[in-house]
Length: 233
Image (cartoon, rainbow, N blue to C red; front, side, top):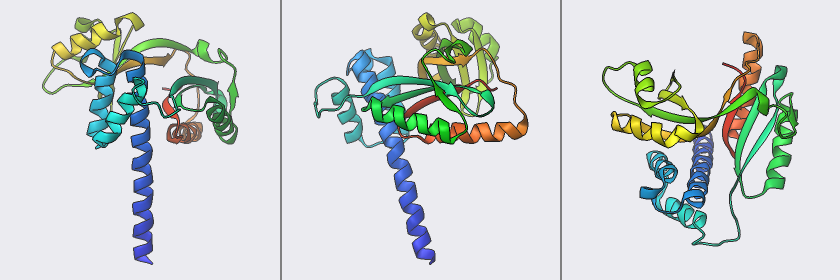
């Protein structure tokens, strides 16, 4: 009985790791498609590779994703970036960024996820007005420093503390400039990308928050999801 439980646990862990590798490979493929296969000339690709290696993603998987994205390995599939909008439980606005090789399948599954979670998927623009398109840089730094001062000195508009370090928000056109300035000031940048920031926050109770966070977790676990944004703090 115990042995079966352990084997089941190992299988679940292997499936989880496989899902993570798939998402990492998709980001590498999209980055290579957008900016070319040379990491030294493509900041997004360089960061995607760094994150993949930190998560022990096999080198063969990384190399294959780069070649597929650059069009050097044609196996008939291409990854597209698609954003879906909708309302989650209790009227919370959702922007779901996906990376998929089958838009029709992904749209159908996303619609089912919204329905199952007590929300509904909307048309393009239905909740987009509740968000602002921004540049997002996630980074960490050792030693003593003033985060607000770091944001001012690098040209970021704001900075927020999170579990793994700090998130710097800037204008779209300043993304690469702020990333480079942070790196120059000793910050280790782990992510730099276009993102969405909620400008209209939905008021919910603590009890409602649990339901919303469970729904957001389901969206995040979805195989094709890349980033999930919601109108909650």
